[in-house]
Image: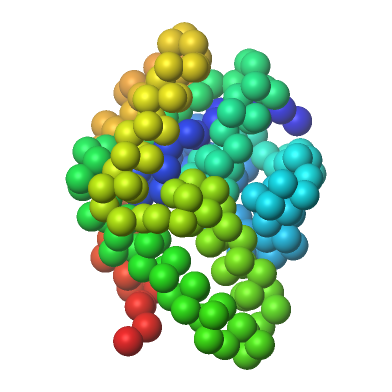
Length: 215
């Protein structure tokens, strides 16, 4: 099965809500980082991709109609090139607001992961350890080059969004902001607008409640 929709926006741009929206519109299942919970074996495959040990992502995404968020975002160019009929959605938000949200959520988790791997990897469950190594490799190393300080991270965020806009043909691309709702998304995908409200999940508070930081 080929991908029908490819999300190229970084995490904290409404990607989990977008995943649920796409699945509600019939473009499911949609791959998001949370899929690795159901498929822990995928962590090793993504890590191998991040390390350049393989370039075969097809086994991971087999059966999926769409993908959003990391880890798929770090190979977005491969996905777009290999699925020429797929629509591309770049989810965006104000860069400063994005960084504030990312710093309190995913970047905080990356710091916890790095500390845990450095100080007590031998005490970690092997499945948990594999997930931590994969996430840090994909997000910290491959996306941000080891530096997610504010200025550098925002520079990477802006450069990524500009590259998507520059390289994806406009007829294939929807630049989409959280909170826009159904209308533009459904028009772009050629489907009817649902009666149900657009999903709204995974706020900064929701994320913090699920993944409290270590003291």
